[in-house]
Image (cartoon, rainbow, N blue to C red):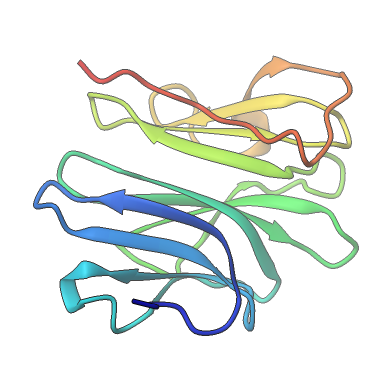
Length: 168
């Protein structure tokens, strides 16, 4: 059975505690993050994230109470990417994680949630070639609140980044 019409990119899947399935993706006509779910038999797309610019490379995670958290790259005019966040408590209300994309862009992101329901976002950028972490447990959002794990190197946008957290 086909559930998509048109072109989609960067597809991800989430499963809830009640075994519902969400499929999120970049809808390429509007370049926003949309999702479909098994709740309505994958019939009705819902927009989770939408900015005036193009969104790229989303990553989503789920808390134990089925709150969905997402990060994505907001591709601004001129090519600098900024990292944005939204969650299911208020879809289409994006928060800037690193607002200073002009001097330190972010090209890839990943998000996870730990056993205490704290979120962690890891990002990688190609201009300063660094690996940054933002977290509700450590520092929150903002350029000055990031924890830099690595500064300088030879990363490219195609290298990607991933974070895994063990929940016990």
